[in-house]
Length: 465
Image (tube, rainbow, N blue to C red):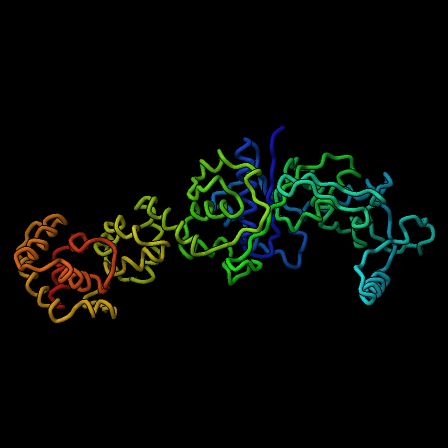
C-alpha cells in the first residue's frame, strides 16, 4: 500500500502555526514511508475564502519547504461530485430526504436549550414517506445513521476511542439549496484522492466518528486516523496571537529560517529521546506517529528564537547576507558598495550572536553608520576620561601600522597593554565603544578594525580621542 496523506486548510486566513505543524507531520509521514503528500484547499465557505488567503497558504507551505505532490485540489470545484455521492446514498437507503424547515429546526433547538439540554435533532422524516411532504417542498439529504450501534475509532495517537450510539445523529449531507456539507465533502475528497492516513488536530476526533459512518454507508475503506493534541501557549492556555499564533509569513518577516521553524514545530508534540536539533533529513528517517504524545504541547517563542540562533550559525554567510539585504536597504538606503562589503565580510562574526535576521542587521549596523556614531548609554560609560586617554595613546600606534590585518592589529593592541603595564580590560572596551557605538558587539576589536578598514577605524577612534 502506498501511503498518501493530505493537508486540507480552509483559505480564510494565513497558514497559522497549528496548521503548519499539521502539514509538517503529514509531509514527514508520507516522506518517511516513501508515499505522497497531497494538498486540498477547502474553499467551500465562499464568503470567507479569498484568493489572497489561498496565495498565503501556498506561499507559506512553499517557504517551509513542504512541497506537495501533484496539483492542489480545490474542494468547491468538486461540489457536483459531492452531490452525486449524497444521491447515491439516498438511492441505496443510507440517506433520506428531510423536509423539516429552518423555522421548525430553530424552534426545536430553542426548546432544547430552554430546557437546559443538549440539542440532538431527530428528524420525523427518517421513517415518514415522502408523499406526506408538500409538493415541491425543499429538502435536505440526511445520513441514515445506524441506531444502537457505537462507533469505534482505532486512532494511531489516541488509541481506541468509542463513541456511543446516542452521540451519532443523522447529519446533513446535502443542504436544501443543493450544496454539500463539510462532513460529506471531506469524506468524498479523501476517498477520491486515495488518502490512506488522516493526520489532523484532535479537535476533529468527533468528526472522525461521524465521517466513518459515511465511509461505511458507501462501502469505502476508512483511512487510518491520527488525531494530534493541539498546541497551547507557554502558559498552558489555548494558543492565541499573544502567544505567537501568527502566520508563516509573519515568522519569515520576523527573521526566522524555514529549517528552524520546521525543527521547532517537529518538537511540538513529537520527540526522539531528548534530541532537540533534528535536521530535515533525519526527521524524515525518524518520524513515525508513535512518537507523537497525547498531551498538548506548549509554544514558546523564546525557545524558537534559541533554535533559530543555532540554524543561523549553521547557515551559509552568503545566504544570510541575501536575507539581510532588504532590511539593510531600508535602514541604509544610501549605503555604498564598500559599506555593504564590510557587512558581508563580518557575517561570520555577526551570526555568532544573532537569533534572527533583523538581529543580524542590528548587530552589524555600525559597519554602515556614518561618523560620528551615536553612542549607547553603556558605550558612553565605557569612554571614561582614563579610557579615552588610552584610546588617544593607541591611535598613533595604529596610524603607524601599514599592514592592516586582524592579527597585526591584535599584536599592536596587546603590545600597547604590555608596554603601558595595563590590562586589556582597561582599554579594549573603550576601543569597541568608539568603533561600534556599543558596549558589546560581535567580534573582537582587532577583527572589527580589519573589516572597517584603516581610514574608517582611525576616523572613529580620533573622533573619540
